[in-house]
Image 1 (cartoon, rainbow, N blue to C red):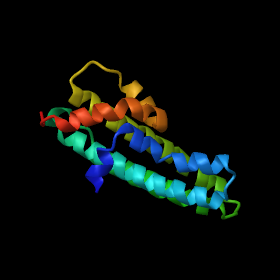
Image 2 (image 1 turned 90 degrees about the vertical axis):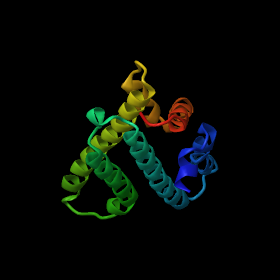
Image 3 (image 1 turned 135 degrees about the vertical axis):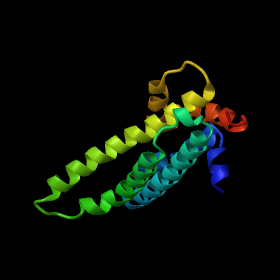
Length: 161
């Protein structure tokens, strides 16, 4: 099941976002949009973790990145993004002191996950490519995945280093 998710073509991954766009365009109840977005976040976390772990296994030991930080960052991204709509409904005077650090850690985790996958992809492709371009492609998911997913699929077809 997970292997089917990570080997989906780029158009298949982009179609995952389509229900959100359609429901916003048709002005459908946002409750369903938020529920689908939470499901999409969980699926995206599974995709990112799977790609990161597979690419990390293909890297020589002397070039490996810290996989434990990656696992923690993906876990935090999924949990925090899934719980944020419920946390926002809590009204208390302490909310800014809870939300601001949570968001800062969320975006630092997001940057680490994007960096990890991008760096692993650059190392396994053996080419002089910019890590920043992969990070931007992953950040702007529906568009960037069209350029990145074929490269990931090529790396998955290759033997380990």
